[in-house]
Image (cartoon, rainbow, N blue to C red; front, side):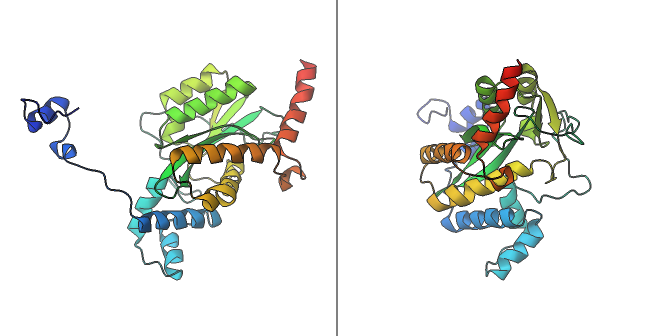
Length: 276
């Protein structure tokens, strides 16, 4: 973008491109190992105590001998895309120009495959750096219908995951998410409408609704991510794909009476297909 050998000065090139001249000379520094270790520990504590905000996490870390300030913990939580999971006043802060859809699951008996899908994003630590993981989960069976790994927490990979799930398994009746900007973006809203589903949103910071996705994240991290410390994005993608296949087909779930998500999902589909 910037040609240092061009007859125009670097300053003038930056002005024409509409970027700060300081960014031309900026060289990104790798995240220190100590910072990555702290982020992983915060992630572990968040899984154990999802109600803990930055103050409580700071105090929990200090009890373990880690001296860190509340503001620094808060900064890392934002970078990781996590927050305390409890309802509090004015927490449902959406993107100011994005729509919020009403919650559609109150009082609804969710008993069928493809009745309700839930989507969520989580932070996945690696040996050096991190990635973000989005999953599409069938609510009734807990089956992961699609997942994608991204180095950025934007709307594109959420749209792709939903599109992939719908292409392979058909459209659900309802798609439930939080009010994050990824799920309220024009691209995601349009994709939900394109597949013919109804969009539902729970309150930001509410742990009641996507609890099954939160359980999936706990399993993914303790049974794969934390054990393997992926050394590259490609390694993370490969290992997570292998784990998701295991999770669906071979991992029994106590909440499913010892059955696997595949067993529940495909058994639930059979009567529907027979009726059709």
